[in-house]
Length: 50
Image (cartoon, rainbow, N blue to C red):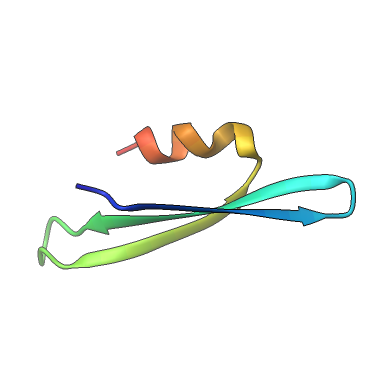
């Protein structure tokens, strides 16, 4: 199960979102965090993508 965290950032006229996803490594079984800053419309695609 992936854990989700979303924070809204606003810089000038652009509105950005920082998304953090916890992903389980298939090799070691340990969890790692994947962070990206993107447009708010792309957040659901980021979380649904494997």
